[in-house]
Structure formats: structure tokens, C-alpha cells
Image 1 (tube, rainbow, N blue to C red):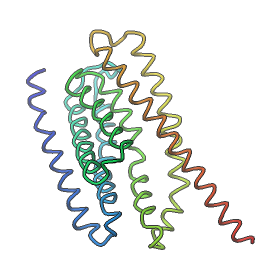
Image 2 (cartoon, helix red, strand yellow):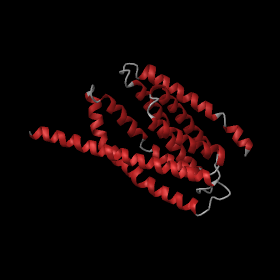
Image 3 (cartoon, rainbow, N blue to C red):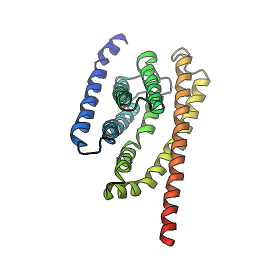
Image 4 (cartoon, rainbow, N blue to C red):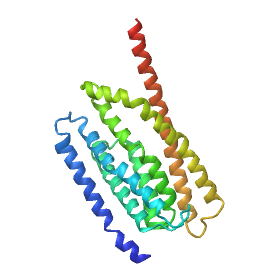
Amino acid sequence: METLTLTLIPNLPLFFTQFLIIYLIAYFIVFRNWNPKFRPEAASCFISLAHGTPAAFLATRAILSHPNPSFSSINTDSQNTVLDYSIAYFLMDLVHYLVFYPSDMLFIGHHLATLFVFVTCRYVANHGAFAILVLLVLAEVTSLCQNTWTLARARRDDSKTAAKVYEFLSPPFYALYSVVRGLAGPVFMYKMIVFYWSGNADGVIPTWVWVSWVVVVVMAISVSILWISNLWVELYRERTGKIEKKTS
């Protein structure tokens, strides 16, 4: 097991360097003509695109390839690689927030908590990646749509194309996000809590580890539900306002 860990550790700096390069390319080349106010956020979305969908596919493959998956099963090489990939991304995006938005404690706290879950699963317990990767898939399955929506939202006031993309994507994105974060996430989280609470992971995953996972994920899901609820309200007000303007 020690040999396995030592072998996979170099993946982390390799992946981090990859995301750093992608971020710099996005900031200085892809979005060089954007308003400086939006360039950092756009670069962050760019590395999120590079992480989200690939991570979802890689995590799904790693989950399905496990010979005996369970909430307490030992991590496989492929599962640990996906965890390293995600750790590297969140580290890079955390640096982004610390540099450009040091007062945004919500996102900084979110990234620190997420990193804690990934790092403890990967380097402390070396078990439970099945549960963490399923949650990763649920979190990242909306990544492509969400980042496209975020970029369009940033430019909707000065670009008609961006405004149209934002308006077109909002309802389906909100609906998908609501189903994944508001339904699938809580259901899977409930099963995870029941499994760990029953003691099936005793002796494999320390109690403080799985309890911290549960706390972090429940808080993340709660914030996500609150966020998407606010967006639904905002969308309703926007559409209602447009209808009133047309009829007045």
C-alpha cells in the first residue's frame, strides 16, 4: 500500500501544473480581450471546464471498474488518480480565489472543505472513494452547462449572443441542477449516512473521517439548493418583468 501511494503522488504536481498552464492560457490568450473585471472569473470557468466533464467520465469509469464497490471499499489505482486530478484542480482554483477574490469566504471555504474530503479519502483512509467519486460525478455532471451559462451571464450586458445563450440555457440548466443537487444528491447522501452509521465501515474508515465527509457534503448540498432556488426566483422575476413590459 505504501508503494502504491508513493507511486501515485507525482500525479498531483503533474495535474496541478496542467491546470496552472490552462489557467494562464485562458487568462492571457483566450480571454485577453475581455473586460479585466471578468477575465479572472472566465479563466476559472475555463479550468473548471477542463476538470468537470473529464472528471465525471473518469470517475464513472473508475467506479464501474471496481471489482467490489461499496461505501467502504479500498481505493483502486484509477480511483486515486481521479482524486489526485480533482485535488489539483481545486488547489489551482483556490489559488485563483486567494489572488483575485480573497474576501470571498464562501467559495474559499467550499474549496477548502472539498479538498479536505478528497485528501482524507485519498491519503488518510485510502478507502471510500466509491462514495466520494459518485458525489463527484453528481457535482460535475452539470459542469459543462454551468460554466457555459456562467460565461454567458458575465457578458450578457455587452453581447447579444451571450444574452441569448444565457436566456436559452437558464431553464434547462436550472432544471438539471435541481434534479441532480436537489434530488439525486440527497438520496445518495442518505444511503451513505445509513451505511456509515450502521458501523459497516468501522475499522476501515475512521469515524472522524466519515463524519466530516457527511458534514461537508450535507452543507454543500444545502448551499447548492439555496443557490439554485434563488436563481429560479430571479428567472421568474426576469420573465415576469419582460411579459409586463410587452403588455404595458
